[in-house]
Structures are given as C-alpha cells and as structure tokens.
Image 1 (cartoon, one colour):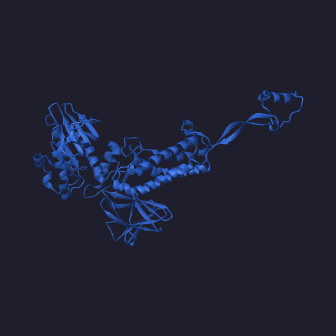
Image 2 (image 1 turned 30 degrees about the vertical axis):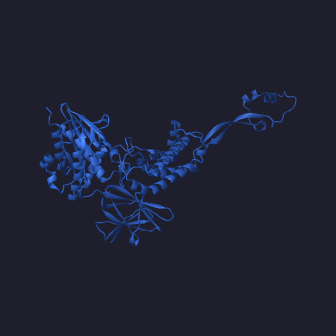
Image 3 (image 1 turned 45 degrees about the horizontal axis):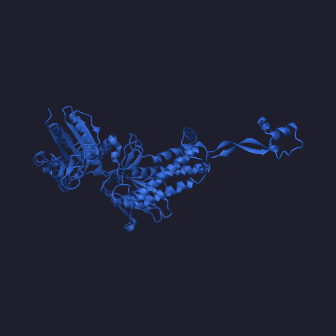
Length: 526
C-alpha cells in the first residue's frame, strides 16, 4: 500500500516507518516526513534519480540491499534535513520531523520543556545534534557561534548570491559630472567663463594677427558619464566582502574540526560542509571581479546607500538575505530559522535547571535570581538568590569540580578526577555552607537507572565544598523509574543518594524535588 504526498518536482523519497513496515509513503522535494521518534529506524528508497546518494545532516547513508537506505534517529528531537543528490550534481531537500521517545516524555511535555528554555534563554538549546528547532535572530549570548553561522549561511547565502548575480546583469548606475577638454569647433554654445582663456578671448574679439584653427583651440566643458561607483553598489560590495570573510573563517574552523560536538560525527560531516563552504567562497570571489563591483572605489555602508537600496526591489531583497546570512543571534519571541539543538538528554538537563530556578523561586516567594560570574565553583551557568533571612542560595549548571585542591577564589573541588555534575545547589549563611547535587538522567529503565546510580555515588563520595561533602546526591528521571526502592524518601534520607522520578512538566516529581531543596535550604532559617 503506497500513498503519495505532493511536493516539488524532482526525485521521490519513499519512506517505510516502524509503525507500519508493510506500507510506505512517497514524498517530493520540500516535504516533511512525520511519525518518526528518537531511537527508531526507518527505511528510505529513492525513485526518479540516477546514481542517487542520500545525506542526512551531511552524513552519507550507505545503500543496503535492494537499493534501500536504513537510518536510525539518535537521541534528538526536531527537524532533520535529508538531501538526495544525483549524478548531475543536482540536489533535492526533504525533512524528517523526529519526536521524543514516548517512553520518557510525551510530545506536549517535551514541547513545554523547549518553550520554557526558549523563554529563559534560547541559546541554551543550541547544540550539535542532527535535529533543528526554530529560533529567532535577535542578539544574545551564544557558545556555538560557528555552528549558528554555518546554519545561517546555508539558509540564506545561496539565495543571496543568486540575487547578486541577477543584479550584475543589470546593475544600478548613475550619471557623474566630469570635465573634459574639446576643440572649439565642436562647441555649439560657449560659456562666458571660457573667455578667461587668453587665446579664446583674443580669437572671439578678432584681436589675433592670424586666424587660428578652431580645431587647435580647446575649451574645458562639463559632461555626464555613467558610473557603477554608486552608494548602493558600495554597500552591496561591502556585504559580499563580509560574507566572503565569514565563509573563509568558517572553512578554517570546519577543516580544523572546531565546530563542536563529537569528533567522529564532526569528521563524518566535514567533507560535505567543506564542499559547501569552498563553493560559496569561490562564487563570492568571482562576483567581486564583475561589474558593478570592480568599478566600486571603496567599501561603504551609509545612509545614502541604504536609501538607494530600499528604493530598488532587487537590491533590497538581496541586501536583506545577505544580512540574514551573517546574523549570529538566536534570542527573541518569534520563530524564524531552524538551527541545530542539543540531544534530547541535553534538553532535559537544561530544562531541569531552568525549571528548578523557577519553581524554587515560587516556593520561597522570592524571585530575585541574578546571574553571577563567581561562586563557590565555576560553571556554565550560575545564579544566586539573596533571602531576607541572611541565607544565600547559589544554583550552578554544569559545575566544574577540579581535581585536588580548589583553585583560587573557588572552594569546590574533587577528591579524585575532574567532575561536572549537572546541577549544584549551595546554601550559605553565617553558620553553614552546604550543598547538594542533582544529576539529570533521561532514561528510566531499570538497567539504565542502576548504571546511572554510579554517578550519584561518585558525586557523593568525591565532591567537596571546602571539606564538606554533598548532603544529597540525587538522580532526576523524567518518567516513573523501574527501581522503586531508590525513589523512596526513606532511602534518600538514610543513604544520602537516590532518585526522584517523574521529574517532568506537570508530574509529581517536580514538587517533591522542590520541597526537598526548599526544606533543606531553610533548615536553620529563623
């Protein structure tokens, strides 16, 4: 049984999903495949193309038996790009919408996590997985600047360069007043200022002894000539030059393996990304040798150039796409561009931290969390809350506990090797300095939980703030765990390690965790 989804012209992508292996759906270029979840395998076939190759997030998928391609979505959720290339170098683009594992969180819960992180700060969602989510382009802090830059180039640079080529076929030009000398015989009307030249004045007044040839007498005259050296062309050349510089920088980063993420995955994506960037760089260099750019005297973006650009639809459209290709921002309320995000477990870890900040503020009726650069430990994200009772709470995400004695201005350290727990909560007052550790684990099956408990024990035994060990070391699990005794409060209070299951949007684990932290933090409050 085969159903056909209408899309653009080009190769047809035939997809078999695990929910119904005996059926298939056919998609055209630009279509999106729905129904796939993380950890699930699908089978792809390509029709209508010779010597086709399939790339998923720049990684080539090997062709198996009967011309089929097998692909398994890893631990990520979002939109994944599928590209089919043919022997004539043409490409067709498709997408797959991958949902989170239903064994861990429901779709609405995962979407709620993403929405809460975006509201807190969207850049915390960025990552190097194959999945992409929609982001705005407003300025904001961003640790994956190169990966965002590459994504924006892919979204907008090809269209920008196509529009610039169209402009080169009929570029803007203006008339420039230029002065030149012509023979008096070619002048129909003589300007009074020309009489300042003695020979011409004498000839006109008949005061010369010999009648001079009018061809030998020259006079300066003003004339209009066409030029491409206009404000709009200067600004457009400046934009193309900036694009070329950014492409060159990103090409070096890709070649050196500096985009971030797993080295093996980055290396598998490198050939296709490098080919794309080299092609862009070659095209921009060729453009800069063509008119109107080779006649432009200088690079300049001014009020006059932007005014000229806004008045010309072709220039305005190209300039808009060119500036979008260079943007690095990811914040804002609107959803515009699809950028790579963290794996689902990374999204879960981040949400746990953001949600604890929010719910703990509600529980303590104090909403004054402020970002700090220096706490008892260094971390990717650090915040503090000053309470009127004299208690100060620090919350750290991805905290760094260095091996051996603590570094200067830090009091957190590890007895053994370097450790990075997900969440560390520190409570300080005149009489105490205590901390607890929360480690988010995205899997809740029995074997996974028992294996993950190793990190809870290690953190409890090895981490120190001054000479104090953690009061608790707890695993946060999104679903109900298969190991009930580890989830009991009595077990946690007796052994100072354990789990808090069902820590996900709308589930009881959130309240249990926040109550635990709040009661512990306010233990000695007056």
